[in-house]
Amino acid sequence: MKRAVIWLLAGWWLGAAGLGSALAAQNVGNASQKGSLLIFPRIDTTTTDHHRRDTIIRISSDYPRDTRLKCQWIDNEQAVSGFELLITSAQPIWFRASDGLGTGTYDGARAGSYPVMAAPFFENRVGELKCWAVNAAGSAQIAWNHLYGSAMIMDYATSTAYEYNSINFTVRPPGYSPGDEVFPPGDLVLSAQAREYDACPKYLLFNFFSSAPGERPIGLDGELSEVSIGRSSLTLIPCHQDLRQDRAPTCTKAKLDVWNENEIKLSGAHQCLKCWFEGYLEDLGTPAGPPGGLGGSAFTWQGLHTTMGRLRVQGVASTVCRGVFKSGKTDPCWTDPSDTRYRGQVATPLLGLLVTELDGGASFLGSTGFGAGTATTAHILWDCDEPPEETSGR
Image (cartoon, rainbow, N blue to C red):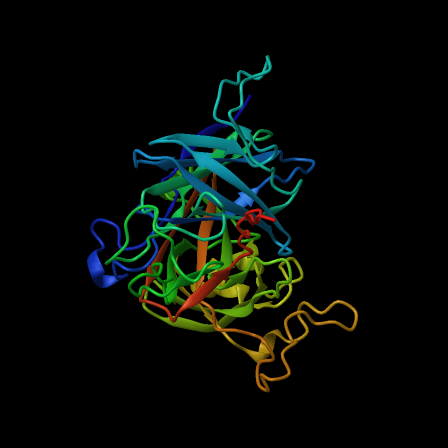
């Protein structure tokens, strides 16, 4: 018998209704606005003995004119694969990460019609997707603050799913109309300044439920315990990224500060990351967790001593991450001799999702997060196409 599924509201919200300016300024990228740049922090096509996952991407444009999107898949090892899509006048589209097919009829039994055929995501991998509006030649990014989207991650083996909204960045006014090129080509400047894109948040805020490994799960419904709290998984990506062919990885340390329900602060937890990170909070700094982490006990009931906690995440440069990603004699995150202190580690702002598992006869998956403040400028660098040369006369 298949388990029932409840989809919790899954979004990455900044300055949404009811929050006002207490958390984020209106010039910070968020999931409650349209934009010219869309970021999907988590894409999943993994298959294991117990799971068979895929991700459905949905993107819409509400402007009555055709536009072209440049999209880049980025996996957890910073492999990059790109494609372009044409969205026609006021069109919504969808496609699957596993094979890139979508927007058409498909019933699973017969061959369907697929007007959209995107390049598929990497097989059996996890990572992210970025899409932004470009001109017809693909030689420059353009202002097109009419895009929005969502990602639905499904597990066919367990009949579970959850959805989150894309994080959207507008091109800041004044002076831009839909279709105007945004300079410089090949550099998406996230600064919140006029004639550039929204900034990233200075730090992220999450509310999380503590876990109780090895003990009776914490229940949300008193003594009945029909709904119990499982583990929480954190996904983080850096705002600053180099997607060019000759690129360098973005390496930073996620500084994690925790408060419990009694307002007691627990500090010292952190996680080193290179380009993309995902892991269970309770596993940080343990053999079960990714390398470069510390302080997972702060997210358990035994360490937090309350059912719920508050988490603040900020990307900082740090010497702590030296050697974490070293392979042989090469450390990809310690390569800049001109930076005598951090050797290339950067204090980049971060974007992310928190997914909490709830079990008790059914399976619940939800993700949420909040951003606060306006960070320093970040850049997304990409290889723009050269316009074709016109034949000269002889």
